[in-house]
Length: 308
Image 1: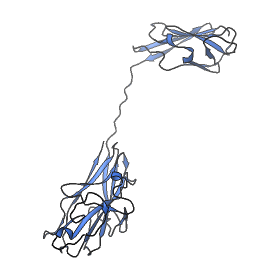
Image 2 (image 1 turned 90 degrees about the vertical axis):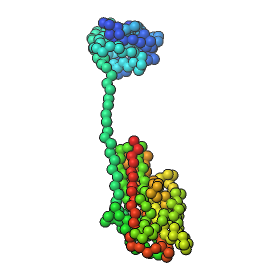
Image 3 (image 1 turned 60 degrees about the vertical axis):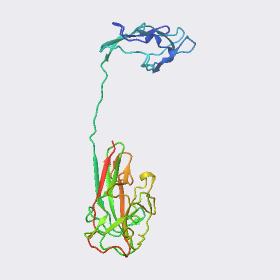
Image 4 (image 1 turned 30 degrees about the horizontal axis):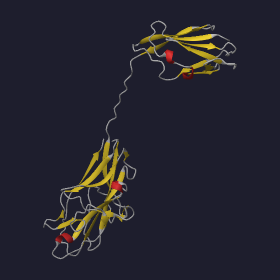
């Protein structure tokens, strides 16, 4: 009704709510089936009300020439205008005024709730074989490693023809900053007689990836008789250093160092290419001067490291 008031008292018993006196008409929204427009001064519209902000209450007065229909009203006060009591407890909010219905409700002020949680670390790294004819970054495998993924059986090496074998690497982890996978050999491929197949290219243990080249086979220089190198199909590794489509090879996985062949910068599922999955190809090529032996061997070790 015209000139009727609704006054909301915040804690009329202890007056511990503060900031009420600073609330203005622009801080209040009144909506619902009994909506009103909060105005600074009354006008000729039909649903205007003014606001009087006190130290412990907010009073809404329907303008004398206006009316607001009875119904459900939602009065919203902007954030950070009224400060709750600093002491835990139950506090009265009183609805009063000249309207017909008055009532009390309460709000409970409790301590802030600290939410904590923990997530267990998970990290799974597996090495799998790949089939004959698998293309790894443009290099096609000569033989299969599927029967025994922990072995690279190059067999009897042909003269002047590269032989390529591969392995698949899978990483699944919830490490926030991902992981790195490196590989290192315990020694160059060496026979019982001491003959060696050196690292690509011509024993240079090249760190910069480049296209495959045959050993130079320079007489009286055994380091040039044969070599082994690797490439990875992790296309975003170190800015895509291994290339795409045409494989680029390195040889710097010697026993005194290690070579990064796979990485990711976030969590991984173990199946998505470049994130949870990558394949590594190893290639050997010898010339006619490579010393005969049927027992060239070495050990490759992968190290997978999560980055939390």
